[in-house]
Image 1 (cartoon, helix red, strand yellow):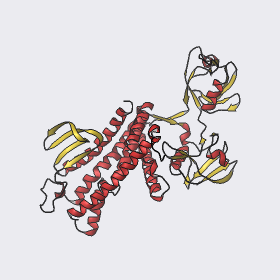
Image 2 (cartoon, rainbow, N blue to C red):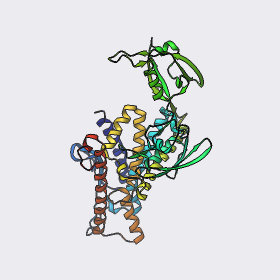
Image 3 (cartoon, helix red, strand yellow):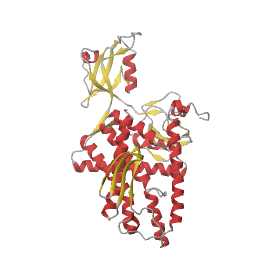
Amino acid sequence: MSTILPFIFVLGVLVFVHELGHFLLARWHGVRVLTFSLGFGPKLFKFTRGDTEYCVSIIPLGGYVKMAGETPDDDAPPKPDEFFAKSKWQRFQIYLAGPAMNVLAAFLIMVGVYLHGVSEPSYQTSAVEVGRVLEGSSAAKAGIQVGDRVTRIAGYDTPTWAEYQKAMLLAAEREIEVVLVRQGAERTLHFTPDLIKEVHAADLGIRPMLRMRVGTVHAGEPAEKAGLKSGDIVLAVDGAPADAEIAVNAFRNNAGKPLTVRVRRDGVEREFVVTPVAKDGPAGSNGRIGVDVRYEQSTIQATGLLDAARLSYDKNLDSAGLVFKTLRGLFLGEASPKQLTGFIGIARASGAMAAEGAATLFEFMAMLSMNLAILNLLPIPMLDGGHIFIMLLEGVARRDFSLRVKERLLMVGFALVMTLMVTVIYNDLMRIEWIEKLVPWR
């Protein structure tokens, strides 16, 4: 349920918003709407108001607005309140309204998120300075070292860790060029990164210096006795620079030994001597200092509505750019179709985002809304963009295509959409470990 409910909520809202756009513009232009449905298949419940039947159907994987005269008849002229009685410009607006509402929803959701405030790891907006190199990784084999600053990957600039993560999505299963700066000198390496199978993305095997932030300090424990406070950022343990993993391991492996811990508190560095105590348990040797471990984060909160609007615009522009970059990568062969995900992947991601909090879930919803808007505008028959594309072709030809031609174009679109659906479902299933083990060619 922790996955299903967030998934139904996220998808339900986005589908409703999309179909509401079509519905409102159809009614605005005097088109009679026969059905407004959330979901497909048998109807769970329904009611009729005016000429429209409103319903919720059993398969919550989309929705539709059925308009009168949406399927034209070459032999009979359309009635005034039917879809094809309207001008091309009006039909264009009706088709565009669904994706436009998704863009608007993404913008408004992020305005709300930024007004509330959202936390993200501090390293995301920092330069790609290597804080750790995983043992046995492609980066270790290529000679990348702690302190190196990665500036370019596979032809894409990587000024921040956020940009680095985007570049790695397009670098899977191929040799790439990695440009880095070491002690002021630029170096260029060529090698094939490791593969993260779950998302089919590349991984160099480098990590940022992800500092440990002290969460709750438990009463009577070594951390409280030493003077550590919630919010302290651990910089070093016994003189050695420490990320979160190194710090936790140092406390765990040194029960009974005094450790000098350097922290940053309110911008000032301080040192404390902390002696971990042995945990109770069968082994009786693991050390603890009595704090909840968190990670160093920065909180982005808008100062007002205009600031929230600016932040939302920048965030959604970034989301749209990533979609276009991925589509370009697929077209040029830089990205693999194995990266595509479908409803199963969205459901799993929705559950994971919900577990991190409402702000994270709504941020994910905004990103997904922008994705749906752009993908729906692709010039593939059956999608909104496909219908718009056909109207553009009719405009160039200066005549309307026959019903038979349109049906053939829609069949091509149906085949493309079904191929895509099969691909993403296969990808989603292969990300489930026990299912992948059942497939002999994996």
